[in-house]
Length: 59
Image (tube, rainbow, N blue to C red; front, side):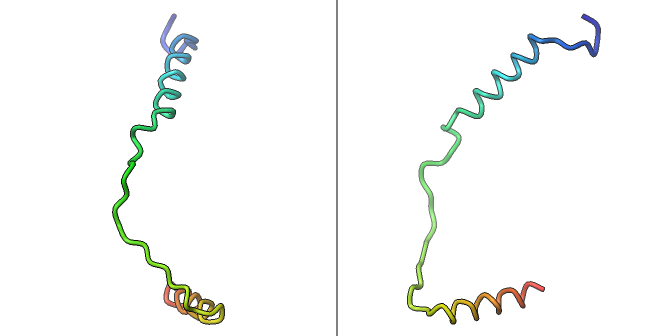
């Protein structure tokens, strides 16, 4: 085959390689580090006020 011609075998080889990479879950971390906190003491109106403050600071 000449340069630039469609090569079915090469296409299939690349598709296999891509599917093997996508299905390999070993690349994903199993352990996460950090801290999560929850503040459940706020009322809905307080949360909305905080959201408005955040939005006004972004612009």
